[in-house]
Amino acid sequence: MTDKYNSPLSDGSELQQWIWLWLPIILAVFVWAGFFSLGRPVYERWFESELGFIELTTPLILVFAIVYGLRAFHLRKHLPVWWLGIWILLVTAGSLYFAGEDLSWGQHLFGWETPEELKAINDQQETNLHNISSWFDQKPRLLLETWIIIGGIFVAGWRRWRGEIFESNNWQYWFWPGFACFPAALLAELVKLPERIKTSFDIASLPTDLRYSELQELMFATFLLCYLASNMRRLVLIQSS
Image 1 (cartoon, rainbow, N blue to C red):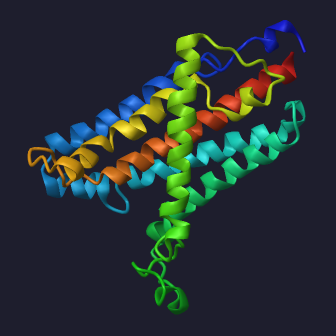
Image 2 (spheres, rainbow, N blue to C red):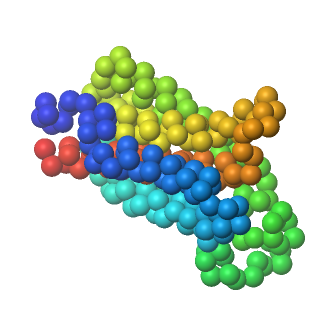
C-alpha cells in the first residue's frame, strides 16, 4: 500500500461534492420551499403522500446506498480487520430494511392487500414491521440517530476542526463517518429542530403541520448513502494502488 493511500481520504474528497455536500442541502431546501410556497393540500399530495417526493426519494437514495455497500463488502479484503466487513454488511442490511419498511416492501407501489394475520397486529394494517412494535421502529431509529450524532457530527466535525488523521490501516478510519457524512448528519438534526423546540417551549409561531420525521428520514438515507459510498470509494482507491 503506497503512501498515497495511507493518507487521509475521509475529508469528502473521495466523493464528488454534489453527492456529499449539495445533495442533502438541495433535498432539504426543496422540501422546505415546497412546504412554504405550496398550499397544504398540494404539498401533502406531492411531497408527503405515500407516492410523494419524500416517500419515494428516501428509498431511492437507499437503493444506491445498498449498491455501494455491497460493492464495499465485496472489497472487504482490503480492510485492516475482518469485522469491518461484517459492519459494512450490517449497515447495508440496515439500509435495505429502512428502504423496504419505508415502502411497506412494495405495498405502496403495487397496492396489494395486507395479509389478515399481519393486518391484525399492524397499527396501520400495512405490510411492514415498524408498525407492529417499537423494537422494529423507534429503537432502531434511535440507534441510527445516536450513531449519526456521535459519529457523523461530533467525531467527523471534531476531526475536521482539529485536523486529526486516521491512517487507512486503523479500524477507526473505516468505522467512523468521515467528513463526507457531516452535511447530511447535521441537516438530519437541524430539520427536526423546529418540532423539538415547539414541543419543549410551545412556540406557536413555528410550523407544526410539516412531517418533520419524514424529512429527517430523508436525511438519514442521505447519510447512509454518503457513508457507504465513502467507504466503497476509498476501498476502490486502495485496490487500484
